[in-house]
Image (cartoon, rainbow, N blue to C red; front, side, top):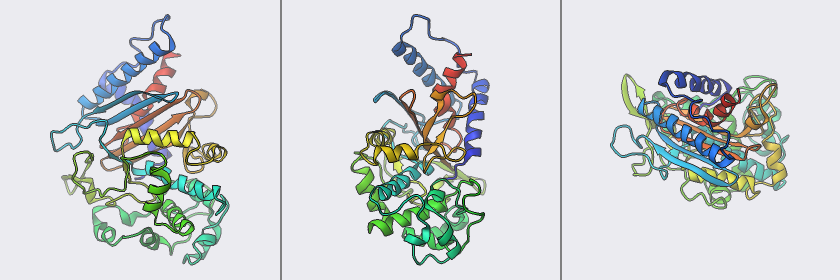
Length: 379
């Protein structure tokens, strides 16, 4: 579930390297001068399809790709296997682990608490979690710093790795997860720098529970999944054996094993819920329409505040020399046997969603493709 600016940077470089390595041309078959916007975009989508197929055939990708533009789904296709050890193929209805892209649900839950007047971006942890053991963390760290990964919260390493299986088995609630790390002070002065973490979002999830009076899973289902009509999104157990759930793999002691052996067994506030590309697009549309969060608050949350971060969303693709059309908001995620990228480009009206059961950064070249293609064509 670890994603940071470095990881996303690697994803960008790999997309260029893979184009060369696989011999997939991103400049061939350029749109003829007479092609209208729809025809030109259809050609771009055909190139994307060819690129994704090439990666799949080379053993570099499996998953689902969805592209929508101006509220219409224009491309929705599955590639490769649902489970690399079985014969069945992924479909557009396959559910994939979201990894850190699931942090957006925690962000929305917090924004809903802000909209309801129960807290603000400047509320400190201790004002909500009144008995939080480490008083320095409780008294100094704010909601804003937790959302932007500038709190110094650090990670929650005890939830990951084969060696921590017994710890994971003891985790029955978000409160249990908070208790793993609540003795620590911030690892750096809150607000002084950005270091991507998972523990900060566990703290945010616990704050949602205390403020709402509902456990985190119930809150997210009732206030996000149901109103957004996300009928195929859930906190499914990683080890669940059902035909519509993608399976990812990792290597432990030289053996290929399901990634459930090294990851939390179900979704939690730092990510790991399961969903389809179509459901994630419904989530995007619900945010854009104001169904989940007031539009002014959502607009504030999707501005860039520090490096690649908005207030809980990635807000990146900006700066000197970067076309305005490349600015996007959303979130990515990656772990063993998981790679996800959900991004929306406000200027062009595009949403690109890539869900994969390959280890990151394998999905990022696919998510990057359309806008890299445009920039290459303009040279």
